[in-house]
Length: 202
Image (cartoon, rainbow, N blue to C red; front, top):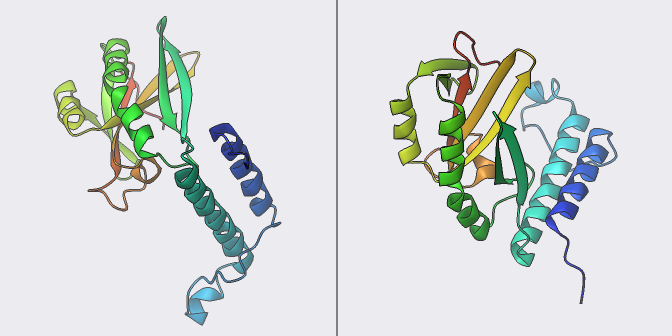
């Protein structure tokens, strides 16, 4: 019986392949920028071929995940204000299986409880304009978004005098959620919590 790769092994395989593509060691010779010669002369074909080669390889890994039931979840731990949260997150290069989506949904309540507790008295901003801008928002507005949210993810940016806590409120496939291509099927909103008087950096 052939060995089935683990989640961590697939992450490493994809990292190695991505590196190979970036260094020009992999090309998709069938990749074309467009059928318009005026546009094509401004686009480097080797860069497009590298990118396409990696996307093709990643799609093959996603098929492998489905066929062999290999989870896309990695476990993270976040400690803030003397409180620790352990939570699941789908690796950015992998997809979520149906069982992964169930796991993410099961952790929604605990992640939100942690977030509400550590962001008391912080200013809240909603990411707008594809993350280029931030609009001051209220807890009531966040609660409305939470109602249509299936899963959550959380991260922080911190240095000696600045703290930003980013809460992702998502639905559908996490791999697609950030790109807003099929907003009704997969998507997410980002809430940035910062100390009063500060503004989000991310």
